[in-house]
Length: 224
Image (cartoon, rainbow, N blue to C red; front, side, top):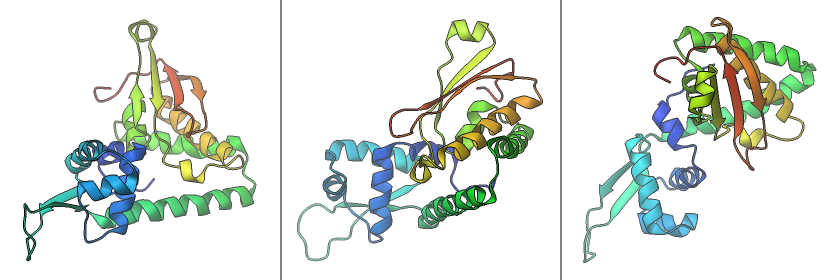
């Protein structure tokens, strides 16, 4: 897996659908836009837009500046722009690449076990960087949410919801098995060296809800 220019915080911020819509508008408007104009374009109340912009700003995705008044009376407006348009271009090109790779995998006729085996190697690489289940999937942009309760923890289990699929735009009935097999393999790879066990990998349509992963036996790395 290639290293993204986006930080883990930025990837998590982008997991929210409203914030993705805001970023899409800002991508198309290089001269910037006000919060009120954004609210009209994404069909949200301006207070909600300001909250999302604050989160995007803290993640380093959006910058803001007061405009210089040139013949217009009144208070200067705050103009919002993408802080790093190149990073957003990277995301868009990455999504296009995913689509091409999925077509290549399908044309090659790889089986799900073969695809899962490739995911295992990626998972081992993440584990080699000191990552566990949560930090690994955060790195990949899945906005993981550790919902492990006390009873599950006593059983040595970890339960995680993947609240954002970065491949949602590429998922079809034909490609879903490929995408899910790859990431099921990633989980197994993360667990492998710690002799952990994959208990459940419940994949759903990302438009209807989060996928669910349950593991047992492996320690939760780097404070997870």
